[in-house]
Amino acid sequence: MDVPVLESEGYATPVASAPAPSTADPLWWRSAVIYQLYIRSFADGNGDGTGDIAGVRAHLDYLKELGVDALWFTPWYASPLADGGYDVSDYRQIHPAFGEIEEAEALIREALALGIRTIIDVVPNHVSNEHEWFKAALAAGPGSPERERFWFVDGDAIPNHWVSNFQGTTWTQVPDGQWYLHLFTPEQPDLNWNHPDVRREHEDVLRFWFDRGVAGVRIDSAALLVKDPELPEVPDGVVAGQHPNTDRDEVHDIYRSWRAVANSYPGTRVLVGEVWMPDPVRFTNYLRPDEMHTAFNFDFMARPWQGSELRESIDSMLAAHAPVHAPSTWVLSNHDVTRTVTRYGRDDSSFAFATKRFGTPTDIALGTRRARAAALLSAALPGSLYLYQGDELGLPEVEDLPEGTRQDPMHFRSDGVDPGRDGCRVPLPWSGTQPPFGFSGGDSQPWLPQPDDWALYTVESEAADPRSMLSLYRAALAIRRGLEGDESFSWLSTDADVLYFARGGGFVSITNLSDRPIDLPEHEEFLLGSTELVDGQLAPDSTAWLRPINHER
Ligand code: NOJ
Image 1 (cartoon, rainbow, N blue to C red):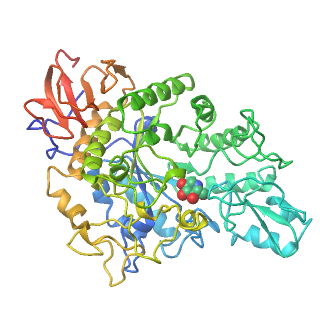
Image 2 (image 1 turned 90 degrees about the horizontal axis):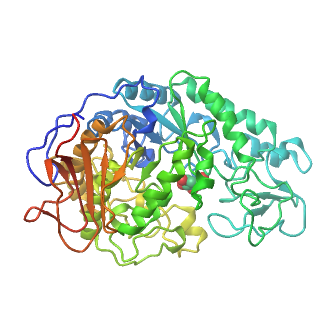
Image 3 (image 1 turned 90 degrees about the vertical axis):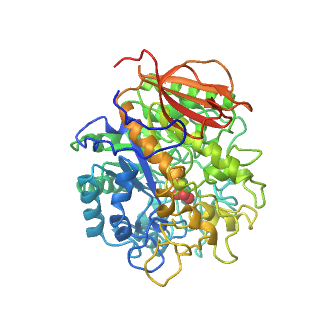
């Protein structure tokens, strides 16, 4: 394995950038580093306070230097933004605040020229209530073919008591008396996947974007598409595969068709599922060879910072993936969950939507230390790695957004009890000492206000600091390139608090989750550390990457 050599023991020091990845490799997705780009908050190219495609194009060099292989764009389509763009009104148009379709095409080309692929988000479970189909359904009235593309039901009373993923009811009554289904907000009516138009349209949307050069799609709420047409209540002790609206066995047929569409294109166009599924086998059923390529491993993300928990998650996920020959993914956060440095700084460092509350005590220094260790731990595991924008800077969750600035329906539908997801979506700080920190060139303030103390977290200041989170990620991703193509993994210790494992012959990773320093195993070379060694020992909440002695060359 050929890795860049670092000069000192501990912390990240700058490394020469690794060679560009090959965009011809059909297996690129098995070990890719994918940067989740929340376009509204990445960089604002036209000065209106909202991130856009122009802003991304102006910062492709940053992404190249960071060392990512692909970008996953959260929805950038025409949308009223009732749920941050997960309410699509037209898949073939870019939201005017983000740019135009020609800019998206140029971006896809320019990124690819730098060796960076583009993955887009598709949201098949629902559309916006401003989508042409839904407007036509409302206009056409009960019993019309237009209404059959959705779940419209007659009745004086609510059709059932399913609970929305955003709390509250899943049914809204329209003036003519019918009810329509929405597993999320009323602005996101659910599509009827038994209808051939719905299936045909989504396959066309895939082709539309594959024709424009995208390398894959991230599939939103992928387990929810198929409903029991009887729309029954959710029974107690529901049998796997027969829940009325989640993970029904028939949903897999949809992804088999999508895989056939993806396979009809040159290169590997990947299907990446957003599948929240507690049972690892039900989860990896989505990754059978004729379905999706990969899906987000939320099990690992949601675990607390404890050795036994993380070890158990790694073991169970690798074991569940093996029979379907799919690589696991490793994800520390995304645009829906509490920022990593904040979550790991709490007494309860697990993640669950139901337990998010204002005012949870947080030790950011501890959380940052653990997030650094977790960054190296997750980057060392076999499979693909997802990095949510801003995590490479160690941004904390913004918990004190000013009154009136929050936008997330999760917050409002909980009557303000759930802080919602705005706190992890605040625009990135690029440079300077005060808002907008280079996010926006114009006079407009960012669409969500940035904290005044984010001068500490700008790309500019972190790039100049070898001890910053950004320097750590840059060094880690450069070294990680040397592991590409090798999917081997073996534990070297059974100690519950020390996650020590080998990848290939020439690389080991060791994470100390105990409360005392530990000796490092004998090694030929110290490659990278998330903290500085203390008297040659690895401190608590730290990871080190080593080249072992007698390794294969
Ligand atoms: C999952 C997305 O990640 C989230 O942001 C969105 O609100 C829901 N799906 C509904 O589309």
